[in-house]
Image 1 (spheres, helix red, strand yellow):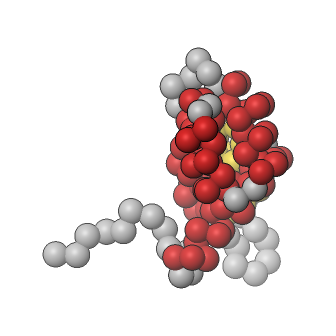
Image 2: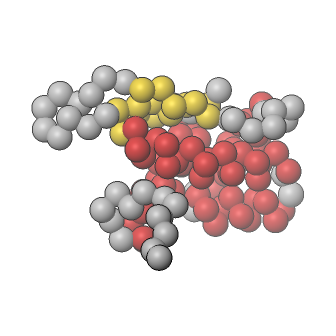
Length: 117
């Protein structure tokens, strides 16, 4: 019996999906709030929350893991020095997805903001 896939495919190959998540996570860390489609925001949430958990441990190994996931030194530095210390006493739930109105013309996709709490 075939099982359901855990993640959304976004009609893209796996490498493009990883690149999409990496770019959106980088933007979220640098800007601290981004606007995207609702499905992408919901898929991005666990990816970013895992990175914040890496930042809370603040070891060399966790920095290397975050660098491997993000691929950007500036984003990793901001994650470890400003974002992760904010959530030192919090046990999870570092991001929030807020739904917006639908996109007007074209595909009328559901839009959402994803931001740090």
